[in-house]
Length: 508
Image 1 (cartoon, helix red, strand yellow):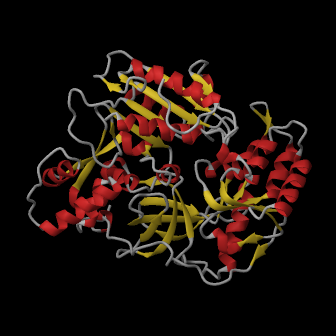
Image 2: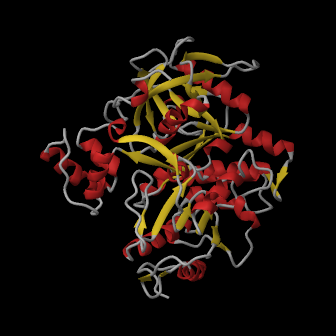
Image 3: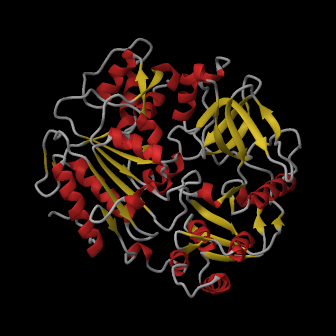
């Protein structure tokens, strides 16, 4: 066995060995650093599970680097080169754009599950450009693309490794070179899936059809998918195919947020004892804040995490009131959460276009203003590789005690959104923010109910997921109060102005 230069813990080294054996059975030998054609009939599904700080992402990243250095092609979902007899492929996946962007920020080229199941169809002329960028063809001559535009595309590809980003640097929009989307017809070889606790059974079955070798990375302490009735998909995988990592790693040392998350595993820690731990940590380390109120400024970029829907709705209306948002319209800078796509089947291509741009259920966006046509919104999609998009939108703001939501902004059909100033802890899974506000009274309400899920008190599962969403700062909000904003909502921190999008040129 050849381990990476960094030091693995015993459990990581053991997991590496088991995964290495599975990859060798598929024709990719980490020990010998050799790659052979795929073997027929080899099917492997493994799971690497562990709590926050146990080194799952570190192990995934090192496996990716080792496999890439052996010449295995990493399939990103934005373009795929010509299939050859001996080509071996790897895709690194996450259930949401936000979760994929967390991996990309650590140098791992992750994409969403959707972008692997559905692949783009390129215009033949621009496919030549993509093949040239990937080293599979000669420099092309394309009408309308100057030599300097091709040079910009090449320079961009060397930095980002993304064909759409490279073509965008040449002055093209996605609608110029992508003519449509189709469901993947041919399988790939290896799939690494992060945040696999979020997978439902259908997604898992789809992935098993695509990848003969599938490696799931997940946290068993998180909450199972809302629509799931059988727990998490890796629960049914038995040892030695299920590999468990413990926490002892350098990156987890001296981290008060992870200390609090792991304290929840102690049966002796009830809600009040946990709050005392939070308060004590806040006195010793600025990364934990004992907060007497919700910060409205922070809600525009990092939603308050709650358990109950009525709390979520109440905080959303308090946020809008604090920023003096009109009742009948949205302010530029208001946060939204995509709640799905409302398009009939005959507009399947438009649905795939929207989803490919990151507008999938759970995506976090910021409203940037109205589009050129009635019912269209300009949006910034967090975590998407090309975040600026304009699309037909239906925005729903729920009212406390009323079944029907208020709709301040609506097209006839398109992407649907809920307000994003506060979200449930269930919907926050897979996401991380620099600073996170957790609404403690809701966690206490769950503790008072005494519910148990998978042998663990529900309030502890909620608290664990909420606390581990914070990358740098955890704010434990203990009172139902909202601070006044320091100024109006902003959009100038979100980068360049939005590019036009194909769906704005045609009515659905």
